[in-house]
Amino acid sequence: MADFAAIAQQFVDFYYKTFDEGRSNLAALYRDHSMLTFENAPQLGTQAIIEKLNGLPFQKVRHQVATLDAQPSNENGGILVLVTGALLVDEEQKPMNYTQTFQLLPDGQGSYFVYNDVFRLVYGA
Image (tube, rainbow, N blue to C red; front, side, top):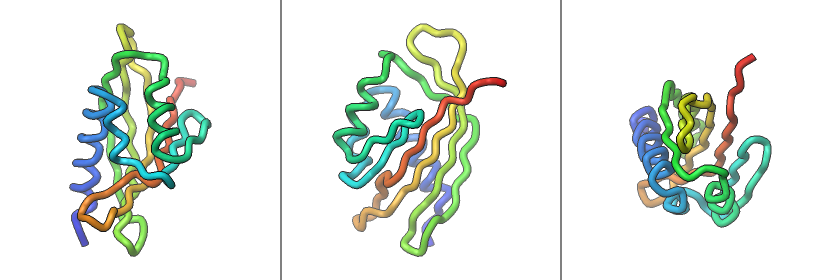
């Protein structure tokens, strides 16, 4: 079994660096049967997912990961990844807390792709 925790860490580092620098470049991580649920709005397929991410109402963003948990998720090498953190958008000084869950599946070529992606902002009580 591959080191799922190390793979999850590498994925998260790459994902958020790429997101913060150019959301369109995330397309290679998704497939036509991938699904993103962003704040209760589901998007199916690479094109719809990237359109959603590019349509978010901010220009600049910076993710700050606070926690990362990972588990093997199936016999085929899938990895479940749960991230919590904060993000700063545009010129805002106050970060917004978020949680994001990824289901990564092997692509058969030694890499992984995002099969499921669920994102939620976490608001204080």
